[in-house]
Length: 76
Image 1 (cartoon, rainbow, N blue to C red):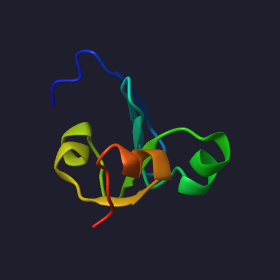
Image 2: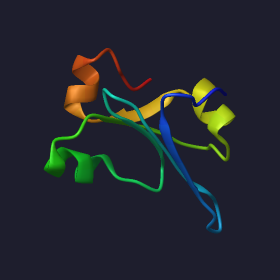
Image 3: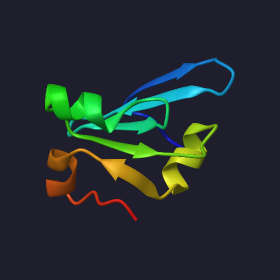
């Protein structure tokens, strides 16, 4: 996955914590909570069952924050 133009973070835990930040919002793994994004008002989508950024690129969105929904993001 080409991450040029995005801020990406990989934190090695028992399973990796993954986050990709773009200009319109965030794509995060299941470690992070949509409830937190609801409180902060940030656009975010959560994908689960991923271990790499490539996995994130092909994963189905499990949950998303309402502004993310308004940007065309929708959970499966």
